[in-house]
Amino acid sequence: MGRQRKLSTFYLDDLFFGVEVTRVQEVIRYHELTRVPLAPEVVQGLINLRGQIVTAVDLRAPLELRDRQNGHEPMNVVLRTEDEPVSLLVDRIGDVLDVDEDAFEPPPETLKGAVRKLIRGAYKLDGTLLLHLDVSAAIGLAYGS
Image 1 (cartoon, helix red, strand yellow):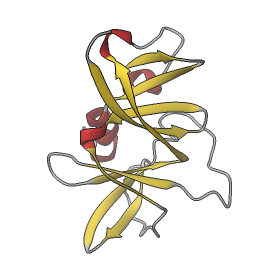
Image 2 (cartoon, helix red, strand yellow):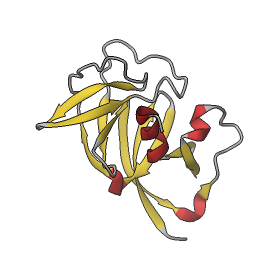
Image 3 (cartoon, rainbow, N blue to C red):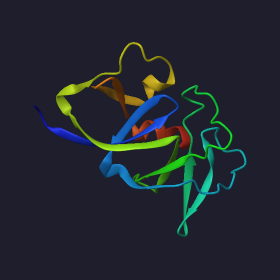
């Protein structure tokens, strides 16, 4: 068994994602959003997190996922970035998992389109595929980079 990596996991639709646990500032319930006129589609709005303004990013559109069902409010995975925290709006929260770095593989050929550009690679787990989200690429969608 090789070195272990800790990933904080979450779901968007049926996709299972993970980010380095060290990038996660906190996980919180849905907060009311303030819309931002002329913002990119991925920017759903701003949330006030104890006096700090945080951009809320929803990856559903770039990942070509269906709209979130009415009545199902997203959760916020607040990530640390070089500049300021950013919240990813997710459908549900998973666990913190220890994954073996030796099990890491490049993005599978079966993944097409935007999801392929937003992941660093994947880990095959028992009966599921854990997609390692490239946080910089995902957040770059909100800031046009």
